[in-house]
Image (cartoon, helix red, strand yellow):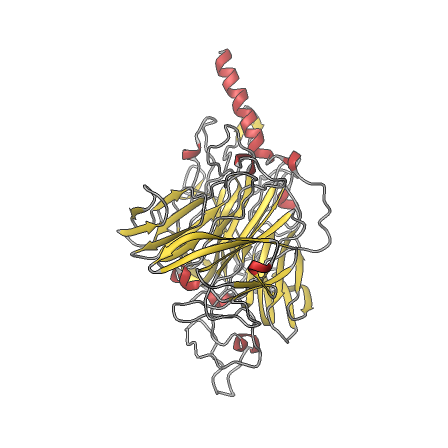
Length: 576
């Protein structure tokens, strides 16, 4: 009996660490001034084309004929959006319209990240045109006529950014008890934010903007670059347990969130885990709204948000292998939608520490499967320790059956075969290359700060980003950092023998940049990476050392760390 009681008490101690996210490591900082966003600029890097993030507003003669892009044409009777016309048919993270959502975050009685400031950072990538940008929401319920409310409008000068501090719009429903995440969790609402500009911009969402114990950020994809087929790669939540011995447990959940952009869009969901029933998702029995491996369809319109969350485990001593992992879930639709995934809190550990700390919020917008390719260069995250490099977690998922994958890593991770929707976990301590016989989806996760050997001050915690394929890289990026973080970093990957510039200076001339570090080869092309410390705000990175971007395409990943949190996202990507 005593041993059983001890086991229960030990479990409660572990659960308390999952619940708190180690709030004692937080900084006492005021983050109410201005915000951080990651301004990424766009341009598809599809095999034979490189794209510039900086848009020349006098040159609209691009011959890209992708069906998703607006064609200005010669018909004077057509209504042509001047912003879409300025994109010249190029599909990338640079765009004119974006959809943002205040995704589910951790919430408890003493630390309430869900109630903290949600924000979208928007940067103007034009060299000479001021962008007028509006943030809107819909006041009506799903299925009712749209009632648009203008939240904020602002003019953003060329090369500048603005942080939209948006009102709280939880997508998991209204809570019954203050400070307790007891809303419906799964919920169909009309709570998306629409960001619209009259000149090309890039956008990133921060959840939260201020330094909380639980935060992450996401690159936002423009409407013209959205897709109709998505395959999810994510990570299970930590502590997905409800009531424990009469006390509330962490009750963390994983989620898939789908945003409609067109009327009467049919969305089909096939989750890999049971989805809890909720408002708009009826109970099929036992509190389950969608059974793992089965299909269920919903109808969405503009601003509509379908938030689907996993069920909780019922066994106090359930191991992480049994926690709900939505990786491999499928989202199909009849019109383009925005798809997000992540977890309230997740604890990604490499096993370095017996009791690592701490759990952290995860979120990222899912890249459409149509942009996936078969070759990747996966740069290592900016190092967070003063000794040997800590590992990242990388999940590689195949889209097709019988996909053979080779990497530049040592055996046994140098060669393996995956089925459709299957993935392999790797723990690299350096950048590496990936070559496959079919398209892949590659996700990188930061491990928890407590699992980093000899951590630097402000080592942060877990975060999620998707790695763009080599053929979706660009030659020019405009992006913004987070705000108020202890350190911000850009990791720049490029073919050997070329160089790149950061804010007008060649990388090798900058004291804040280190490298190059080898990353492996694809065919006869070797790759290497530079890691650069960057200040808060907007930055531009392009290939070459000249005043204008060179022809070679490069990859840029952005990271930010502070005592109890992190963010990460690709600076941008082509979406061809």
